[in-house]
Length: 108
Image (tube, rainbow, N blue to C red):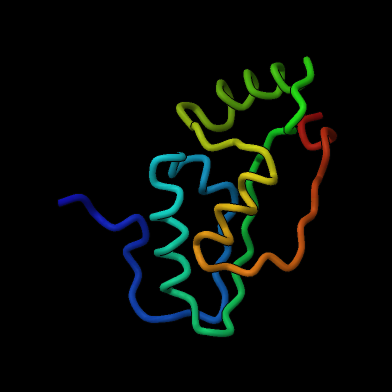
């Protein structure tokens, strides 16, 4: 038996996830989102920040990926395009109300 991703009990008004999904990984992405959803009150708010990738590949994305893999998220495997992340959130029971892209300047 493996431990819960989020060893919390009760329900919360708000939950924030700052680039946690990259560490959870693609295999457990839905499990993570379902656990968060189950910990929120019915009208609760989930603030979800991820380090995503552009859908259209560019050279800068390779540099970004190498930098992230070495310095920020060693072993992480869930930096994905925004459309994929949004779809996963919706599958997990969330209503996506707002998306903000920090753009490439996040890495400089």
